Length: 287
Image 1 (spheres, rainbow, N blue to C red):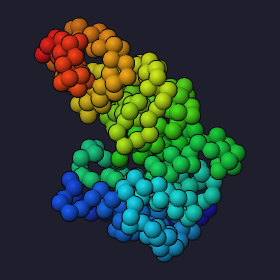
Image 2 (image 1 turned 90 degrees about the horizontal axis):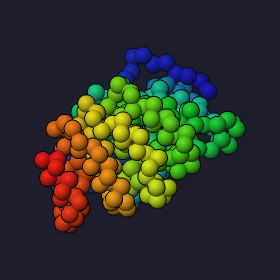
Image 3 (image 1 turned 120 degrees about the vertical axis):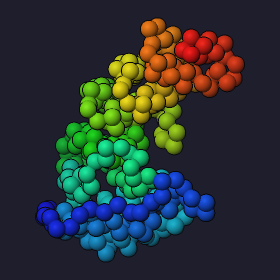
Image 4 (image 1 turned 180 degrees about the horizontal axis):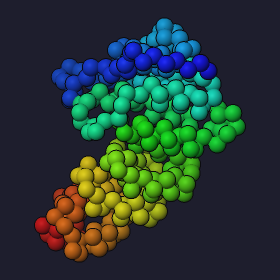
């Protein structure tokens, strides 16, 4: 693999609105311009990258696909055009990234540009056979660490929690102490049992207790971005194990700060709307 060092050019992101406009859809975020930016960024760091072939193949069959399907499609095309060994391909992708964001909302919907990157990790990051027989876990974890600082690795983390729950949870537990709030949020958001848009985690739907130490570690996080994820995670638990979710909130309400009280109210808002007495009581206690 030939490494290209082009210090005179900069990686690019496609133009994107802060919210979806009338007459457009999320899938428009991964269209021709995004593909051109992706090819440009990779070409800056990988001398053997065939820009024209990548762009041509990436556009084939793209139009009818949804945003998630486009992410998977572009991951497959990347697989065809990047180095065959997974860790070498990941090295190229990570070196092609623009700098991490201090806030994810700075770029609006432009962050969906990284969906093919996380889709690549999810599709190929668990298989030693595509990595020269070497365990790809560390490479995949480092890739998701970098990607979540620019977008979110909540979608790609889930296959690892299903395949390797103990070692993945151990890594996420370490990351609950990371200085970057995007990384800390991933620990809660990526392990939600019923994360919208994403594959469910059957083991955590059946028994969410292995994830509770992560929620405990983050319940008083300094960043609302993280605390909201914890609240939504507890809300997921309440869908399958309401007694456990209410027990968690009951314990957390004792001596709770205003920030934690908000978290509790947010966590039980859906059962409260349905008139569940335990949820209504908790919202009153956390008022």
